[in-house]
Length: 431
Image (cartoon, rainbow, N blue to C red; front, side, top):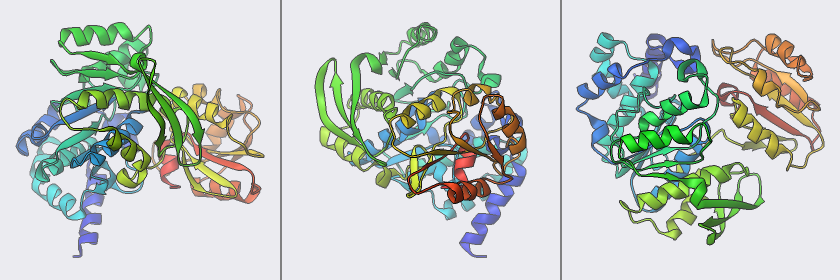
């Protein structure tokens, strides 16, 4: 059997045997660390063999992870990056210096760990997290940037012993698992704060600051709030870049810093990243040149996908994975700064979340193309169409994402904008 066929057979086995939150939602969520601890023990505790930057947050944690990874790579460090979910290829979840984990490693890993998986029945995320840990250890990375999957305290990634913890922000998402108030959600995210390990918090709210401050005090951890020290001011933007002036304590630190990501909303993620890099200078040699180069060539260095991602022109097709109120609010604000004749929105959502708070934010003047991602969690397009109508959003329902996009392209003029959004899984079928 060829390697490609062996790899696909391995994935088919995993998809059929392991519950996957990306596809089925709540049944795949595990409320303890028992399985990941067992997997790590069987593998010889690989997650403890290299320095880790551990990143949590409601929004922006993925972008922040990619920014940190790009700069650390630019500084000459062999950098592991563990993110989720994947868009096109399972191997996106574990990469080193932008290169995906090899197919051969995935096949061998599953063969090695199969007896343990048969015994403990881990989730797909628990398995993929253990795979990333093991891959980084075998390849002897200099540092790994690890993104939490959901929450923090009970997330499978929370068995690492980091040199730095990062919490980007707190918003309303996954409330059925994390709690229905900001303090409760913050308490779950704060679970990644470790004893005497500094933590960067991107932004604080009156409801969340006491939660983080108390946890940091209990853990004797230095806590730094990025927005109190750093300010990123967007100056200009294109489809793939944004230029910022960066101020630290009110003084200009980096003039015209170029970020290889579009969207003024990246300012807060950039502030969080720069605050984290200041603390990482305690461990690594990180110079201004590394920061500039890493951020300017972020996509090339890391393989970033899915967030404010322009995939076609005339008409422009823009994909964004926003799926909660905070993320969609950022998208809507960014649209106000763009120039186009008419807006077409290809929209799909999942059925285990309340869509009302997102639908209420979307522009009523747009033409909508409702669709369902090809996963069990996908909300039926006709149901979404009916819910959207209650908020003045008008359009047709389509059975597939690609069908909806095809219809939007057919109707749009060259100067129109097509936005594909509402779910990571919708975007994944397009990019």
